[in-house]
Image (tube, rainbow, N blue to C red):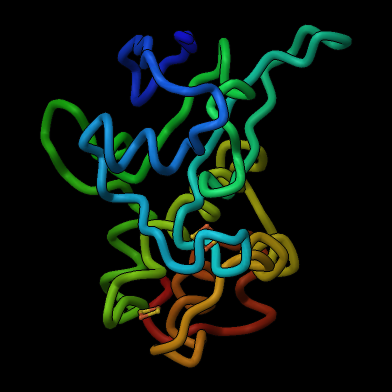
Length: 173
Ligand code: FES
Ligand code: FES
């Protein structure tokens, strides 16, 4: 059964079992391996992508960070899915500022968690372009990192906060 969705700006109609997870569709059928499979059970956040769908009540497009390993493909019908590959500038091929900050603050070591961390932060900025410190901490609720101790990830995130002066981050200015 085909599912109609858009992935990183390109319309796709993967002819897969609708129970296939979005993560398996991305990684094994569409060649998008940026989203990582850590636990495959919704516990680590390594597979986080941004899903944009129209709310049928308000008719507004809503952006959510979603664990792709838990999302059945059939639930993505009509959605726009953005993966970590899709936020690079299409013309310059430069990384998105979130990707740059994570790198500059040394927020990536083995890198397994990084695509999910980046997409959680990216989704927050889509929903709230001027986040505060609490928003930054909250947006990483579903993302585990076994390497960094979180400090450099949080510091990278806080460099976007409007109230970062309350909690100075070295190199954030
Ligand atoms: Fe761990 Fe999806 S792979 S939450
Ligand atoms: Fe290794 Fe986060 S950098 S899990």
